[in-house]
Amino acid sequence: MAGSSTIDPEEVENEFEEGVDEIPDLDDEDPEVAEPDFAAESDVPEATTAAAADFSSAETVDDLSSESSEILTSLESAVDDVPANALSISASLTEDDIEAMLDLDQDLPDGVDADAIVASLPDDIIALLPQINYDFSSSASSTVIPNGINVLNSGVDLDPVAQAVDAPCEDVYNDAYDDVIADLQATRDEQLATVFANFERRSAAAEDRFNSRTETLNNSADEFAAEIEAIAEEFLLAAEGLDFAEEELRLMAFLVALEGRIELQSWYDAASTVISNARTTEETTIEERRDDRESTVNSNYQNSADQAREILVAGIAACHNQGSGS
Image (tube, rainbow, N blue to C red):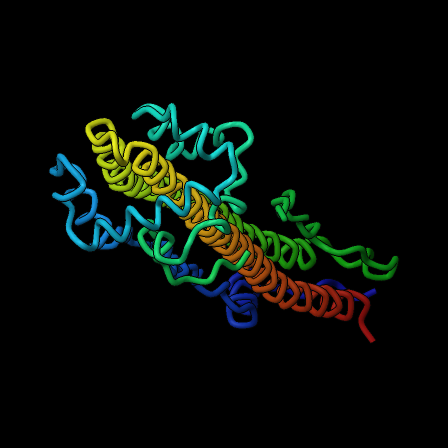
């Protein structure tokens, strides 16, 4: 066996430096967030507010405007047609009852069949009831962060012939390889730490946005309820001063509150779905971004590590050839 040739460690380092790509810089910009639309407007018809004011100021039936007189006539017909429980509830209706009906956290009074009551009303009375107007479509996995990445073993398993090579040549390649892999691993681990930190930060931000949107929704619901409550209470107070229209105006106060609750509930449920779907979409995007960036970092690392391994294998083979002679 011939003696081993001298090998320059600096040349080996240069061989790895020129033959192994650096891991590219991490590109992990925050994804854009599309703000969901769940806005709405409360609409109490002008004819309703005018009628409430007219009934409130009247002392006799002769004080009513022609429009209010027509409304009273329609309410007299409604009294005969609505389900009996609507009349019994309206007969004892209080301001607290109206507030409770418009509170989405509370149930409607027992036995109230809202659909049946509204279905029994004449069209001109329905046209006076409040509306919540909105125009949006309500579209209605957690991924486990992987464990640490397996590290390539430094050096390679050599056949018995290669093991006969003088140690210095093999050691130079193994030492250079170990240094390259250590640098690659350090870059990879730093980038993965950034990816996971970005994921946690974005997840927390998505939850904050969900909570903020829910708060906005609740505040809007409270505002709409207060507007509707004011009109219902105005009819209720007017009823207390007008014996000739007390039953009809009490019914009107009940109907305003009931339809207001129906409208509020419909919008609130649809808006809640929009807000919930927005959070789900954001969470999915954030998870996919994390998984994609994690995969890219690991792929970049593996590509460079494979290049280093190829240089190591070729270098060890060269050491073998130098050590065994021909």
